Image 1 (cartoon, rainbow, N blue to C red):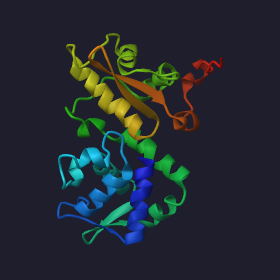
Image 2: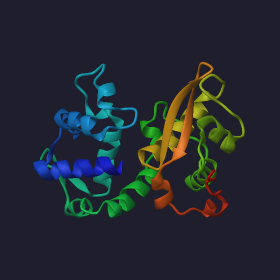
Image 3: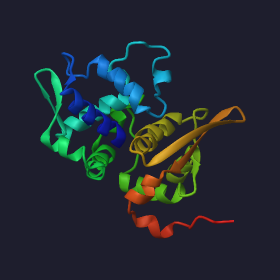
Image 4: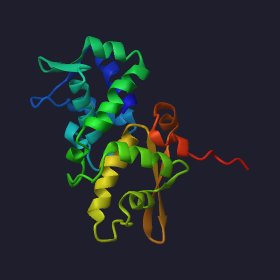
Length: 222
């Protein structure tokens, strides 16, 4: 999300502005540029253009969310049919660390992540609990199913009853942290099922200070 924000702000600066549609969404020319340059996990240009040659902002959720963030944080504004970078946005675009401190906490903690998820269902829980438990459970990597079990006591997946709870947790918590650059997920097939593995990124360890840090085990060196 930070990289996408920097790319968008710098694009608007270099081109003077980004054109908007009548509904105040980014015009397709920029949406296509964003798809090609963001290289978003699970939404690469190859995947996005495989079935659709024309893509609108609402069809590329990361950009739609980012657009909302930039306007909400007053890093950009709409003026006469264009998106323009504000003085504040221009300043923060020069300092990625400061931009991260403004953008990512707001994105993770303040956004209704269910609003852009598939089923618009919210998982039970709070961010302080999710973050502190994930800090321990994912320290050396784990699976999405095991992490769900750690929180809710019963393993679920797309093949069991209650799978929508699993999807809500994955969409609103794990995907949000992945979009923030704090987690990374990988997929593999095992016994005919897709298994999702979850790992921390280096950014998690360098950017976060949590109550459960003292519980982390050092990485074993053999």
